[in-house]
Length: 115
Length: 114
Image (cartoon, rainbow over all chains, first blue to last red; front, side):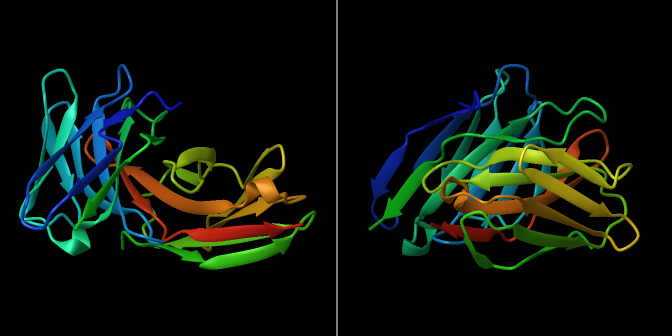
């Protein structure tokens, strides 16, 4: 158990709908990362937040948005869903304190199925 | 310049054999090189990591070899076991204004056959 929690575990929805994925980082971790992993694909970095502020953006679609709240939990919002958005969405967290950092702790993921 | 190239895409190894996965990077600002292991349906988990001031790090059957001049690093799994069957991701990270910026390789699906 990495200490990172994600809800829900599974989500089935229809095209055109909007969903929110939630992530709680490990206690004390300030950075939250979101990744998308399609079937048999690598990890596509979406976005990173650090202590409430957006720090880096990857291949995140305009239909997707995220935020990190004062309690450090994060939400990923996916709207106008398309069939191709079906994937595993992972959240990861890390400490970000000087050189002894770099390790990311991944949550169990949310499997999104768009029908 | 942020890319991390990983090969092979897939690998089949006999039980007891050595599995070798290679990664290469371009940006010399990277200063932390972790390997993650991912089992089907699970999130990736850190397996082993190395900093560029050492050329090799060993933890049990897993060894990272690091060649700073060639900008390459590799994961060696000795005495590979069926339980090692998983997808392995290399990554490279660097300090970017006080936070770590991490780039992942594309992954290698390892199958260890009995």
